[in-house]
Image (cartoon, rainbow, N blue to C red; front, side, top):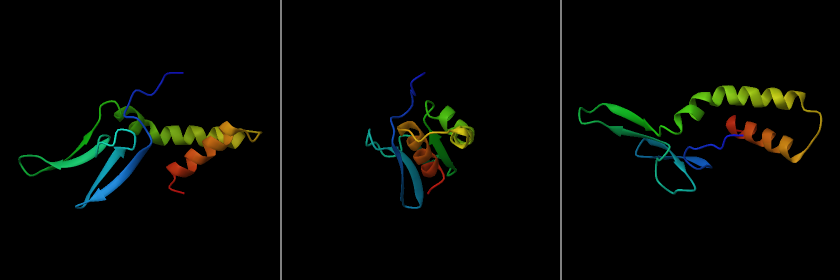
Length: 93
């Protein structure tokens, strides 16, 4: 299995001054995953770590695939419970 090379997780959303920032709880750096900023021309832009872009783009498919695995799982193991927990987290439950 390939190790995730992006910003260390867990990630957490922070909001202040009407700006949302996704930050790593491990690094403690504000907005190191995703953050908004105003460019010199006044346009609002969003910066995303290049290492995190693939996992963010794949998130809906990852969630769907993991939901399918859970739907066919026939035993209640630690891995099964962890998968259910991360699905709930992804769905905001």
